Each structure stands twice: as structure tokens, then as C-alpha cells.
Image 1 (cartoon, rainbow, N blue to C red):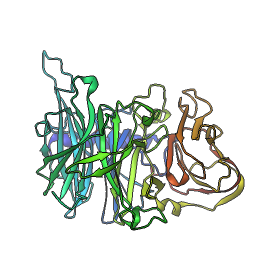
Image 2 (cartoon, helix red, strand yellow):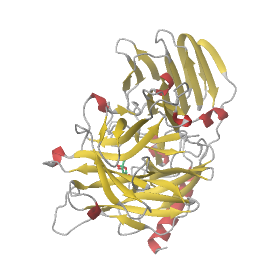
Image 3 (tube, helix red, strand yellow):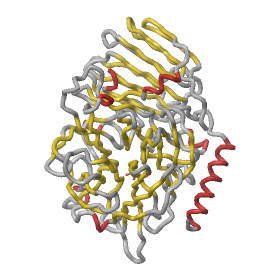
Image 4 (tube, rainbow, N blue to C red):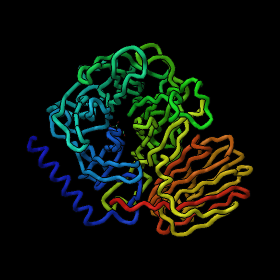
Length: 503
Ligand code: FRU
């Protein structure tokens, strides 16, 4: 261990201890993974080994507004309660000195193999570097761990010299997976890339595909791009094969139905209606063909049309479920004020979601384990009001004529706009000091509204419409909690979620 590693690790621990003493304030979450201290963004290295789930995340423990990126770590036995484990990877080498950026993990030969991008921004006296075509290094680094908490030496497996000439120096977020195809190398790596256009305004996002048989030596095998450009850079790529196993089929889907494969990306610079209303969208596209040969991508669909969702990553649980976790936050929103900053932390991850297909669409639902934390049910026909519940699980089923309004904490409404054919999530008060922190309204097209499931935590709300066909998520910061439902003729059930505070 070099001295920088040792001292950074010690400082990280001290920061976390200080934060624990000070407390995390009223919006500390019960089951949404949040940082012990500082800033959090993307989920990284999601995996399950010997029954234990591991979630790593981008964490800046020294700066609540996002500074030097490390990997924070937490473990769970059920994806609902998380055991914090501090910072486990810090920028301590010349090839990751400006951040241990995002990446993924694969369990192989009884060890967690984690890959990440070592970010480097060089400075050269007398030269103006643009950090797109020069000045930046995006290194692909491999680290191994037997227990998920302690990693061995860092191994540099690729540098900018290993990426094709057609891309800029923005190449990152390795997603390593077992090759889903019958031919080719045992492992594939997807890397998000910014390909060079004729000028910087015409760069375009794409995915570089690398292959390896030993997880150490990688060679470029293919490049995947959409027919028309979707933004200038694709971050955090992922590939999901749904429907091939029972765990990824929605109830009722014929096992003989063809599987649905989708490529997930988080594009920067995407414009147009498909990109939704956020600064940065995250979505999936049907993928056909081979990752190693000719292939094509279909239409881009947002994973989540709410305010706070970006850079999701998935992994396969040991029981075969495909679990997705996203960053429940959004970068570069000057109009938004997040009051947890005053308590020394910012952002969280989404609730882990099972991803399945009904043969047509990609559906998301809260992990089944959440239901085991439900307390006694409160039931209402068409209407229900409950005060004081911070963590809850609400189901509204059999909605008639799309008529359903759920109001949370007296100021956040979820309803259906029949004229527009859209589910709407709207804060009544849009002031920066209000419980929405300055947020307004988000909408998602839905031909009908038949059912709603809303999961609430101290400062998070996730809304799953029509069995998870549309999802809207947002952070909120209420001073008092309530759930009010008006849905004439529908069955309304509300469970408190009895999850102890983690931090
Ligand atoms: C996405 C992202 C990644 C990068 C990481 C740095 O939010 O920009 O592309 O690796 O965050 O924190």
C-alpha cells in the first residue's frame, strides 16, 4: 500500500466518522443507499457473491458538491437494508489521479473482478488542452477482491492507445459481462465513447466492444452506434437479455417467446422528445444482431421519466433476476436546491428494481424483498389518507377511467392527464426552498393508467405505472409526511415499510 492510499483511506474514515457524529438530518434514507458522507453519483460494480450483494458507488467524501471520485461500498443480504463499508478504492496512482470513475464487476473464479476508468487530466505548461482530443487519459483498470471490501493491486489493462483512432479521449465506464453469444471470447467489455465528428459539435456517442478470454488482455472487437446520432457521448453502457429465463419474464409470457435484448446508455447532448425533460437522459434501445458483428439499435426509451435518474447499471442476481440500480440524482441542475447538502451529503441510489419483459416492453418493479418489510396494511376503496408515514409502499389497482390522484406530503401530485395521454408528476410549490427544491413537473406518455405503485422513503419517491411500463422518480424534502389517494372504484392498499435507519 502506498502512503497516499493509506492517508486517503484514513481521511475518508475520519470524514465518515465526523458525519456519523453530526447526523445526516431529517431526510436520511431508510432503504435508498446514500453516501456516508459527501457526494454520490453512479452505482458501480454491482454484483452478488456467495449470497451477499455488493454495491459500489461514485463517492466524493471530501466535497458534498462532487470533487475527487472514489468508490464507496455497501453490502446487503436482501437489497433493502445496506451495511455501509466506507470508501474502498481511492485515486492513488498516476493512472487514476483525477478520479476512480465508474465501472462494473464480474464474479469469476470466486473473486470479484472490478473494472473502472482511471481518469487523468494532464497539465502541460504553455499549452491549452481541451480535454476532449488531448490532455485526458481514460485508463481501464482491473482490481480483484475476495471479500468485496479489500482490493489487491491495481492493474492497468487499457490506455487511450488501445482505443480506436475514431474516438476522442472520452472513453469510460467499462461494463464487463460474460459473452451472451455462442461464439467469440468468454468475456466482453462495453465502453462508452465519444466518437470524433468533423468538428466538436458533431461528435457522437457510441459503444466500443472489447473481447477477452482472461479478463486481462482485451482487444477491440466491434463498435455499436445508433443509425442517427443520439448525443455526443454515451456514458455507462449496459446490455440486458430479457425473457430468456423465467426470472426475466413477466407473468404470463410464453417461455417460447423470443428474448428481448436491449442496450442501455446514458447519452450526453441528446436532444428531441425522446430525451425527455432532464439535462441528461438514460434509456434503452432494442438491440438486434451480434455484439461482435453486424447489429442494429431500435428506438430510445427512457428508463425513468422523473427528475432524478441517471447512469443505471444492472447485474444478474444468483437466482437469475436482472436487477437495475440507478443514480437517483441529476447533474448540472442550477435551479435545484438539495437541502441534504446542509447535512453533509447529497444524492442516493434508486431502490433496486427487477427488470423483466412481457415480450413487448421492458418493465421495472421494486425488488420482491421490499414486501417483507411491509407492516399492517391499510385498505381503502377509492380513497385513503394516511399521515406521518415516512417509508411506505402504496398500490392502487383497478383504476377506472384513468381517475387516480396520489398526493404526497400535501404538495407532490401524481395523476393522469387524459387529454394528453400522460402520467404527470408535479410539485405544487416550485420555490427552491419548497419540498421539491425548485422542481416543477415531469410527464410520461402512457396510453392508459390502470395501476400505480408508489414507494416512498424519507426523501425519495418512485412511481411505477401500469406494472412498471412507465416509471417516474424524484427526491423530495417534506417537513411532514402524508399519503392521500383519490381513485374512485379502485382498490387502494398502503403498507408502512418498517425498515430501520441505516445511517
Ligand atoms: C456518469 C459519469 C460517468 C463517469 C462518472 C464520474 O454520471 O459522468 O461517465 O465515469 O460519472 O463520476
